[in-house]
Length: 85
Length: 202
Image (cartoon, rainbow over all chains, first blue to last red; front, side, top):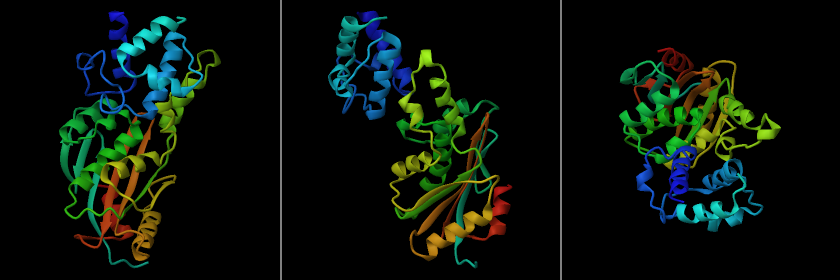
């Protein structure tokens, strides 16, 4: 699980172009949106594409992302349970 | 059309160099645009984390506009933006096309797609500098001083704007060039087609 969380942090930084954020600065339970990393709605869509492309998880309802993308910890748990690749 | 307006300030970005009023602010080693834009962002003291999410056209326009606007001692929210180029958003259009060309690997990126219009760069500038006036982005075969002059004069004379940020911002096939200038009621250079053309060629 810790490998997956590390992988997710690296992907979030790379794919969302968080140029001034380091992996160690993202806590497992930090909020990704709002006051946390400050991600926006386009970032949310990008994360939905990432779930599909990298883990074979299709979200039929984008609103599901609100819960799944709460933190790296929550994302990692969801991916572990639902991944198809 | 005669003018009582002035070119208050102008900036060039090309060949790894940023210059304001013809004076070099930054001269970086020869490199690609991605590396150069990061260097320029840091060296010019640009403070806007969302910069790194922009496409190359927006980064170029944003850097050039930021140099002009943060040095403006009398900023006006009623500043219009009139930009132009030849390649439109082709640089990003092709990047988007590459993500959807293979039906078996069809993953269009929302973050890329949102930049598949050239005028998005105007939005980025407007958000950062809180500008609320008119804006337009024109596609020309080449730099068109006549058109930019007429359009800016019209905006100023009809009181649609108190200042106009005009210019050319082009990214195409590894090449990039920005020339932006700010037209207002004050300045040392008369707002004329001849002067716009002269400054563009500096």
